[in-house]
Image 1 (cartoon, one colour):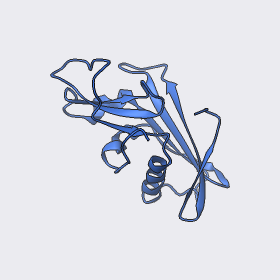
Image 2 (cartoon, helix red, strand yellow):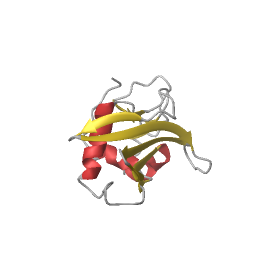
Image 3 (cartoon, helix red, strand yellow):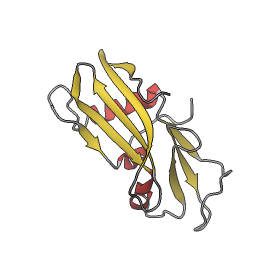
Image 4 (cartoon, helix red, strand yellow):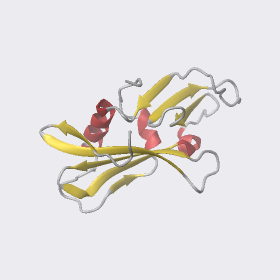
Length: 149
């Protein structure tokens, strides 16, 4: 998916525009990979929902980090993998993932929109972006569709 293309999705008779892109942090301790998602309600570009899924945030997510780890955007841009890890060993490159969430899928974006509309995102009322830098934690809260397709 090209970074500059805004895709459309219709939810409850409202049209939203969204894009997803893979970026790298310049300042990081463990992992530089980030998947970013920006979602706008059509006609309200000043109040987007901006989500950053940073692999770096794994350290604050899991109390048992030795057992599970979210891997961001590799080998597929936009896909977040959950790996089960053997005792304190880094995951091998060919390790089977146990779950994946594809941020390129409209079904995933629809669930993110619905969830944040029921929280604090008010695109018609706000004039500022609604920014979540540690969106990785929501993968364990929101029931997002799994799978690459």
